[in-house]
Length: 325
Image 1 (cartoon, rainbow, N blue to C red):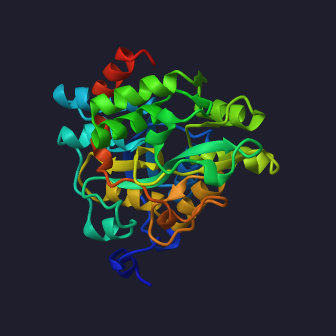
Image 2 (cartoon, rainbow, N blue to C red):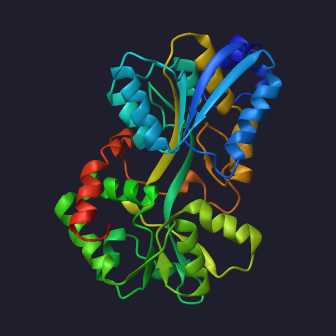
């Protein structure tokens, strides 16, 4: 299959063998490393494209997004592409009018529901309720995250964690500020706080709490190293409790090089690598999900424009007001 034909084929990842070589200089703002796995992807792209001069600025996703906006206001453009950990930061850039449109054939590679004109979701993560299998059965996990406010379950959470705050933003958008504030107060009354969501999952497995709030991959990574771990994934339905959020990439400069760089992240090789090593969810049509996660079409996430999650400030204000931050 020719390069042109492969680009035009809708749906499904292509192989790196079908992509053009990358040549020239490009600056990537990289929002995270995921334990070095993203760096491994970039190093592989470098090796495959010896005429590519790839410069990387690393930092927290939110900080880099703010830098891109500030640089634009100052009339400076240093980044050509931005690979962000969450769609909220992508929304910040899009709202500022800085993202370049993507070609239709690239957009068509992505799963329905994750097709955007100005950015490409690379991988996803679903919000879950990891639960201790000695204490609870799957049937005891409520289908609504809102029902936890009226339960007698002990809960682990990490409210300072960025993914939790995106989850609260989604709840605000879906349920409103008052309902979200009441829910946070009720959960706080029985919650134990941990520094991060890996800590939440480990606490659930030890039996310190009945269940917790965490992205799916922490549980899968724990079970990969400890197959008999007493923890399983629980899912709510059609609410913020099963939000599928995404990290993604956008082009800030015109031309073929930024777009073709993005194509590399959507290849079979990169999508499979991130699924098998990081347990993230491939968002290219047809790519297999990580082992241990139900198929994405069997989960019932809420319908929400992920770029709306950029509106984080009202969420932080609300969380401070109710005393969880």
